[in-house]
Image (cartoon, rainbow, N blue to C red; front, side, top):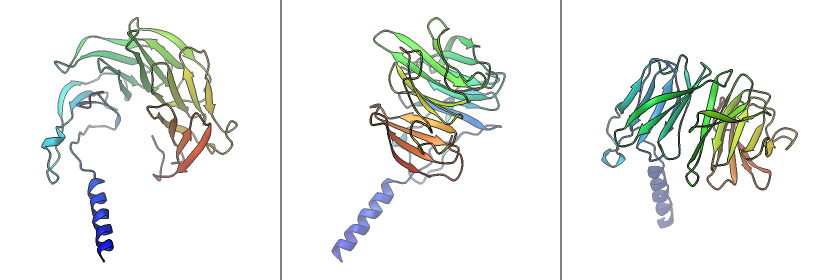
Length: 272
């Protein structure tokens, strides 16, 4: 009986630890398409179909009670009609000094952010090299060389562009995908990964002019099950890749071992 009571208490403690509590909510007149947290975790940026861009304050968790109501966040900065179309993606640089947005108006905008005043400062920069919807972006920052690069991809010519944010000039245009690019993710200052509607995942190194590796139906039979890749992410060590798919699958890969670890279905519809 003692061991049963102990196991029950352990389960109760586990259940208590695993509870998620809503702490804040934000509502827009149209669909919210993108959210990204500032590197220090105290701010988050929101973009929506209404063309509105917001930078919001994340609440102080230490002051929250389990039973309290959640309220809209404090909006520190708001720009209406930030783009001529819907805001599809948002990304902060690693140091939090730049924030970028991409849209179905085929443009990217990036702006400098002052962490002391919590405001956007200076003139925004607009990039126009894409000929289709910009669906995702990721920064590749190198603090030792003071370089700040932005990788972006989407529809249109299905190319991935890498832009030098100091000169505002594209440095590379990576080709290889034959379908719209849905997701980009970088885990260090030279490597990033892309997922596409062409049902492939490709790894890129900005020092090389083509993909350095890929996961696709031919490379690893049965790995992707002929399903568009809708989301990709790599753990900080660069060893594990997780991908989301249009058929609701979530797939975990061992990058260095070139092998599929697990496929599971946590959702009943497309993962984005």
